[in-house]
Length: 504
Picture 1 (cartoon, rainbow, N blue to C red):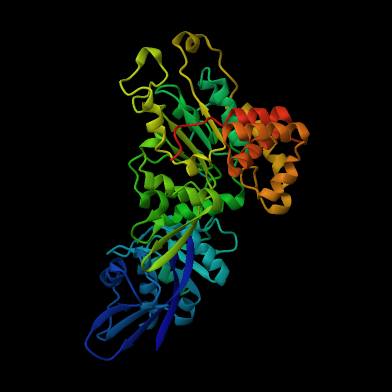
Picture 2: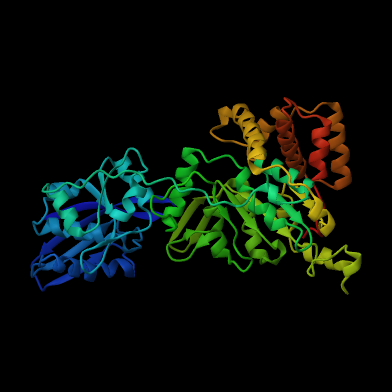
């Protein structure tokens, strides 16, 4: 007899169904796992043997073969421990085979029979709901899996508790979703003294989902401004929260309960590699651009990032997805994020400051900012300078608007966009709608078309650059409550197209 149960293998944020089969056959005693297992899966044999021994279950003196089907799908991770143990228990008659065949499970076993949490409980619950089977998982992963409304979830702290549940002797209590994690505070916008133009740009970026580049000397407040952007963004919708949490679940970054309606804010160091940014490594895990999905990716000291790392951003910024290509698999992750970047005007950081000129002036700034390629630079809707604030102005400047006040205006502008683009799907903003929909929304008059034409000629704007100016102008009009884009909106949008460095 062959006992069967189910689990999942992860391809990106997607959980692929895996059938676990266990057969006992005459011959020398042995325990083999086949079906393209990695080292962690092969080591499950010793963990399962020890955990069953701790419960007083002796393995038969027969050859045990566990097959993980489909055999050509790589099986990676310790979450295969629990389904292998349950399938083996069904094969030796401890558990009813039909009951084990009707569940999906995942979890790591300790040597004494305790169940340890694993990554991926949320996408596994989605797969279990689609297959209409019960999900069995460790207790610490249960609150995360229970966020999927259609899933039936049973979670236990020990293997013997799951045996009692599956045999019908002591059913496990119903699992409820964990508490929604409170968003981390990035500070209030009123903490930033002065920098009124930068605050205005931040509001426009939040209202339309635009990419933003700030250039200014050290200490001007660029990082401080960027950290306050999440506080201006609207709360993630239920769909967005689930999408983002599934990616974080696969990466093992979710805490107890797991889900949050706050948008992610990722700020990788400039020493990050291509794999760290785009994804890769063992199991092709998501990178920073996917972990920032539906949120903000902040790159401080932008020119210091390796050029290959920066060029990785270009395609995801346009398509909203990234594909991690490896010899044995191609994994795609959603990567729809808002890119916020900051840069010093030159390597020493004081270009343009008459009191702190460097020996490389005047070419220092052009060479330094020229590390940012023209195609990547063209994808920033808002590019502007953040000047230093003199100490006298800093001490005397009144506190500005609170983040909550600005966020209310942003929410109103986003609501206008959601209504305008309702036919395109949930939560579309000006920065990401197709060109045809934007053209209908802008509807420039003769004065606006003339202004854009003159600006495009003088500033050397590409076709993409012109379109991004129109997107920004449409957001400015939304913040002003205007049904159409007029010349003043377009003029303000053009004022944020700062020529930066020498395009490379």
